[in-house]
Length: 130
Image 1 (tube, rainbow, N blue to C red):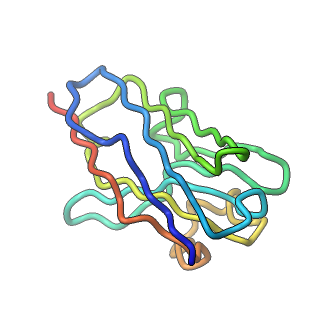
Image 2 (cartoon, helix red, strand yellow; image 1 turned 30 degrees about the vertical axis):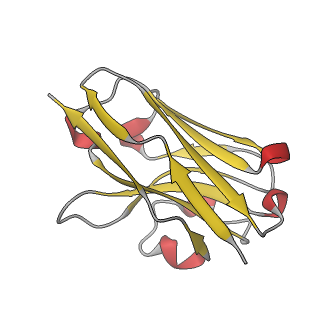
């Protein structure tokens, strides 16, 4: 049984940092592209960052470039998202997701790309106060 569990969310002041973690079990972690999505109240879920299983390239939505860093530890089947210089508009529920498709990361901003991610965590809340 596949399990995806996020942790590390919390309340932080604007300008602060958080590191999210996502541990996946029950799947061959190396064979999956891994991504972070987020969903703010009354907004659609958006892809934030993705790490390709094909070539380990990283992808980011424009709004987080230069502030967030995605990384993975395959030995410990864990995905990370280091978030620096946080802004109130980063407030959202953050989800970790796994996809067996090698092409998903460059397409992270495409409409309904989340349909191609087969495994999801329950989410971790990030709240940035101004």
